[in-house]
Image 1: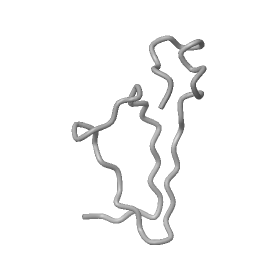
Image 2 (image 1 turned 180 degrees about the horizontal axis):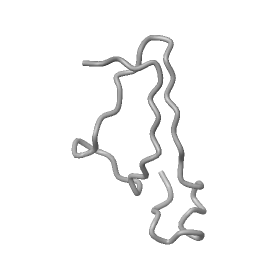
Image 3 (image 1 turned 135 degrees about the vertical axis):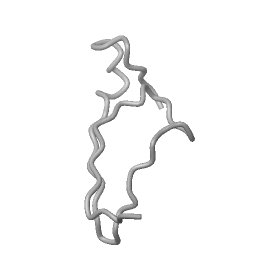
Image 4 (image 1 turned 120 degrees about the vertical axis):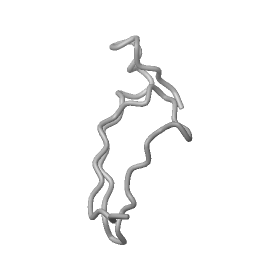
Length: 54
């Protein structure tokens, strides 16, 4: 298993995560996780195919 100093995620899961989602990492001690997020709860108003909320 390769331990990464930095893990980058730009995959949108449409608000759904679970055991079917691919795991990223693991991240080394002191490493960092960088990710892009959907534009908050108002995202669906801009892009209706993106689910918003928690």
